[in-house]
Length: 139
Image (cartoon, rainbow, N blue to C red):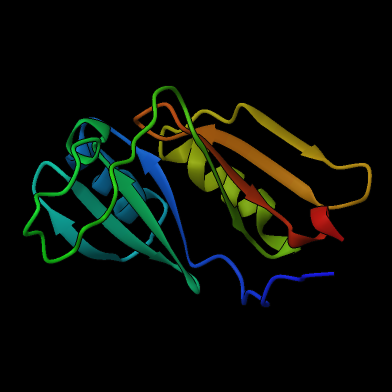
């Protein structure tokens, strides 16, 4: 039987937003992620622990690369809301909920999973579903 080589984990995840300035404000000022790269009207990237969150304007990334592109990244993009989940320590959820609500963020769901672990769900300015979860939800 042929088996794939081992992976070391997720390196990056992508969401899409039309207004990158609103996205940058949300991810840096509300969530607290450091911005690590930006290309005007195309993308803004953030460090999230060992992973990178990529936020693209879908219209800008759907175009194929030019034949002489130094970085020939294939076209990509999506429509509708995406989902991104960040891990948090079990004892921090009440503080996260209070902080988000004080920041004007509406909590859509707050519950304990049957296998244990709590999740908070809310939306970013682009309408993406954002979750903060206890890693125990996957134990």
